[in-house]
Length: 461
Ligand SMILES: Nc1nc2c(ncn2[C@@H]2O[C@H](COP(=O)(O)OP(=O)(O)OP(=O)(O)O)[C@@H](O)[C@H]2O)c(=O)[nH]1
Ligand SMILES: [Mg+2]
Image (tube, rainbow, N blue to C red; front, top):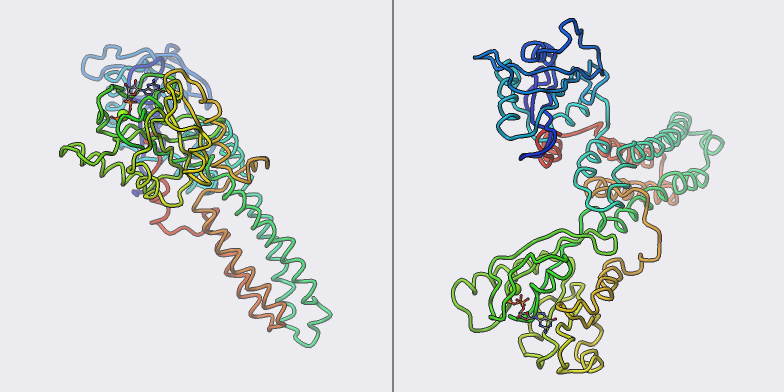
């Protein structure tokens, strides 16, 4: 990414029509750009930091007013990026907001890359990497729980936790290094058993509980990729519509209606679920339908959960059994749809056929059984974690991967202590763990990793 010396600008609000749109500018030219394009109502205004000014943006060619705006200057270092920041609140029409952005760019700013404002906040030391990532989590949060976890991370709770861990390890390291410098007095300085207890309580256990929080809470962060699978005409699209409570997918009595898959995000019992309606499967299909079915099978590979829909009013088809087998051991719920019609099989019979699988009898048309299905989804996804309370903050996959490496090094250090190896070995493992902890908060950050993190942000954040 380019230099921090540049001034960057972007539209910070979603594209389209709306009440207010915000153009954000950050960098050394921010104030001079504001002076050049903004006519304050009060001509003597001195752009006091964090004050809101009323005025107009003037059209450069005609000198006429382009829009009526409110403008704020936030002087460095008391801003989001720690640079001079200007925010222009204008009317949010695509043409107006683009015109204002173009004027800002014409006065020396360049378009911001995705996440570049937050990247600057990180590079300028206002936030650490866990907080920068939390900004994105908060923007993406689909449920109140995901938002609460992101907010804890944003407040620096994980940063504080990592710093506590580092302090504990550094103090242990200092004691061990004294033992290395004065080998004869080793036993008097720190006993290995004491060091092992400290290592376990102060580092290994807390790291393990953070990893557990990731495993437990990851569904709340990432959403559960759920695929609705089944034979043609089973009522898959009707189920999607019923869960969404809107007529999203086309439903007809003609088998093979759905061709393109439809993905929607919803909250089921507080869980973020990304649900995908797919093309129904049948043996005799034309070319477009065959392609659609291939896509269905691709999506199945990526799914965390499968809702297998069958038409409960007709006999089970051999294709049902082979499709269910195809899903392997993925978590699955058999949804026996159309329970408003006379059933072809009693529930007990279905239980016998599908052995240990969870079964929910529903009617996508009347809504019967949908609540039970939702609760079943929750219990299948959360498994034995269901009754436990959700961790207050959930590390992301990158952080959890590094925490795993931290734990591995600490466990090696613990074994070295238990095996009475020389303190140099123990110290070396602790140094490795400290390196990984540093990477979590972004103290050491390869460019490639940083770019990957910030590239996933939206423009203007
Ligand atoms: N009686 C009854 N009919 C239903 C129910 N669910 C769906 N249907 C009907 O079954 C037919 C097929 O429904 P869809 O939702 O299009 O089925 P699908 O599985 O998406 O079908 P394809 O996209 O063709 O694979 C339609 O005529 C629906 O009205 C239900 O619960 N009860
Ligand atoms: Mg369909």
